[in-house]
Amino acid sequence: MKAWAATRAATGGRAGLQRREPFWQRIHVDPWLLLLIFTIGAVAGFVLYSASSMNLAMLYRQGAAYVVGLAAMLVIAQFEPRFMQRWVPVFYVGGTLLLVAVLIVGTEAKGAQRWLSIPGLMRFQPSEVMKLVMPMSVAWYLGRRNLPPTFRHVCVSLMIIALPVLLILKQPDLGTSLLIGASGIFVLLLAGLRWRYIIGAGVMLVPAAVAMWFFVLHGYQKQRILTFLNPESDPLGAGWNIIQSKAAIGSGGVFGKGWLHGTQSHLDFLPEGHTDFIIAVLAEEFGLVGVCLLLSVYLLVIARGLFITLQAQDSFCKLLAGSVTLTFFVYVFVNIGMVSGLLPVVGVPLPLISYGGTSLVTLLSGFGILMSVHTHRKWMTQG
Image: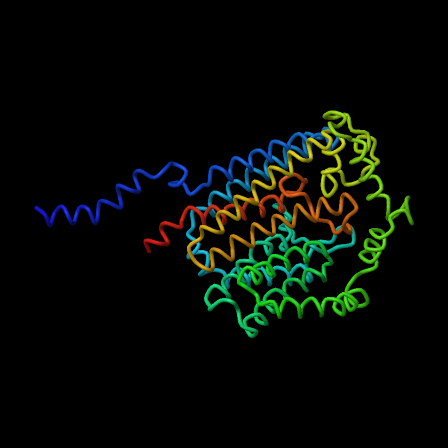
């Protein structure tokens, strides 16, 4: 009888614990993160409707992208991080081959060759896929080794980062290449990169920046940097976007002009108001209060991501979750910085707000990775 009771305690106890798990845990979803995503999505609907001059077709397309992104998030959250870890090399090789295919048979638009088209079905940017694959790849490599990384491991990690970044620079797409490079560098920093390597990289940054200016950057990219330094030098040309964006932000005041009552966007003074400069539309119509509320929600998302990172069970999960969270922070920081004139314009959308299906699906897939890391941590301990 005692043996039966001991056996039941050993075999049935775990099942009993699983039965008592909350519903959110059983479907591998973090309710707090999901609530914050829905909150930002609701804000995005109102702002995009106004920024697109009440274009319902655009709103429906973005809504469809949200549904696809949420489905991708839920599917990815079901997979254990260890399962994803096994497939990382395949993801990296496949993503790199897609970037090569873009340079050979990619679709060109507005002077850039960044898309692959499937006739009759869809057009997508392979570089968006690398926003997730890059941190996974560096985390996969470093997570299997003792930390902090040695010089050899740092060099291999930089090679993993450099290949996709250079391919994306060739498209050309400076903003995306910087984001993807940053996501890989974040993994190195989170792995405990030694200070002498960081200081050495800082010393090499100046000659690297000079080399990029003369041999890598295209003419329009150089113009963006010059415009950032002095937008008033060409107020009707290259400086137009920044000047009108700052005018929209300033005219909103504290409480804004009211929804659908913005003048800079509705009178077509503000270009790309539904994509890169959508925060200027929000600032004009909802004022400083509206911007601060949105930034507060963004900060809660970042705080939740960092909390998930701290609770992760192994090096791969910690590095991956931390990098996804910090990359999301860079999205917000760079977009608001460039729209307000504090950073050069590099074409980075405002996460979960700006119009763009591929970017939206990629971001929500990243949240699926965070949810997987968080909800599978007990399984990993038991395994």
